[in-house]
Amino acid sequence: MPTPRIVIGLEIHVQLSTKSKIFCGCANEFGGEPNTHCCPICLGMPGVLPVFNEEVLRSALALSIAVGARPSGRCRFARKNYFYPDLPKGYQISQFEECLSYGGAVEIETDGRRKRIGLDRIQVEEDAGKSLHSEDSHMDDSLVDMNRCGTPLLEIISLPQPGKPNTVADPSLYMNSPDEAVAYWTKLRQIVRYLSVSECSMEQGNMRCDANVSIWDDERKAFGTKTEIKNLNSFRFAHRALSLEIARHLDVLADGGKVAQETMLYDPASDRVAPMRSKEEAHDYRYFPEPDLVPVVISPELIDELTTAIPELPEARQARLEKEFALAADAAALLTSERPLADYFEAVVAAGGEPRTAANWVMGDVLRELNARKVGIAEFAVAPAALAELIALVKDGAVNVNIAREVFGDMAATGKAAKDIVRERGLVQISDEAALAATVAEVLDRLPNEVARYHAGEKKLLGFFVGQVMRATKGQANPKLLNAIIQDALAGKPPAGGPVPKK
Image (cartoon, rainbow, N blue to C red; front, side, top):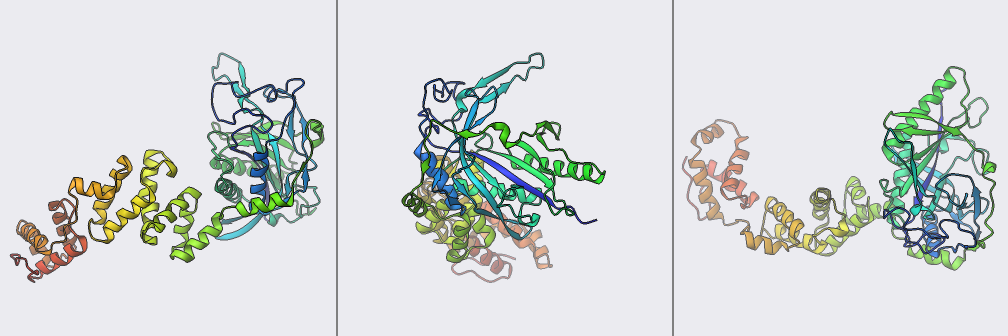
């Protein structure tokens, strides 16, 4: 029996971070008191007219260009009709036959293999409200918050779309495992964040995913019956839900059964995927053109303007950092994982920080402080030029690396300059050879047994002696010079200008 070939398609919804909503002037903000960020247009009151937000168009086109999609010369909105308590109009303004853009791809890497995941289309729509269900087991109440109504959404739909002319009947071209699906979602999120069109905060619902799963029918050379898992809001949940649903498909088929076309939900608490309802076909939504909005004509001039404004994207930036600064691939990948982090690193280098040293500081101490303080790089107290100054102090021998890390912690807490902290705390590195030799002699004098063991062959005690002298100098000794002085002292060599240590 041939190995089952899994086929996965993702529909990813991204809330755009425009200041106002898609068809009205209400604030497009997360949170706030329920039902305070809505108006008659959001709520679909009789007689109101929606007006399309140009910034939504620009953001959507920027993403289309970034992933190599083909923007339509003209797109139009349609009404998607269905009833749900948090959809006050009874329909959602979306797109159907004439979408914003078509095609494009996102390149992923899993297990060292690169693969292009094709896109079917990108379309613009409005979000619905939010139903809040009571957690009290003695109550059966649901409340509705309309603040989210009219939030601008992008729906990014990957291939395959079985039955569509542009879907090639070759399962290897699409996502074939939960690992690939998560890699695709992760990469798409990175691109969206680079473009600054959405925060993509999973916790705030800025980015959600519906996943389609089917098993390729090798005999018929066709896609198997698909099921859809709705409302996945984390990479971990998506991976787990897909793994469970794929296993269920395989079990059904192995027993000679047929997979039913259903909509599923994943429950993290019970770690189960269960049916939600029978899957509606597209015509059940009774799509028809939105009569209150004219078609949107997208000019070549606007495409040219947005193409010019697209920032350097993660893969290109990573390749440049590797070449320009001789960084390892994994280091460049981490530094370019987020655009603000990459900007910070390059600003440190521009301010005089040696590239590989700057990379080590940003990947280590900077990220550690950001995580500990739960702030983003934009709110970080240590400016790039300030970090470059600290790196210069180490290079010039004013402080050693260990002291520099202490200083950096103070800089992150207070925002003070490195030189000021070093001066106030008296942390200047001790590089006076005679002074260090005197301290080494005192330390070795106190440790005759350890010195004897060293001479008997326990050379690993050298690190112990270095630690003792560092403690005596409060960590301010020049490490490189200190090592040389200790080795000379243990060998009985007199230091320049210093006393000969006793044996």
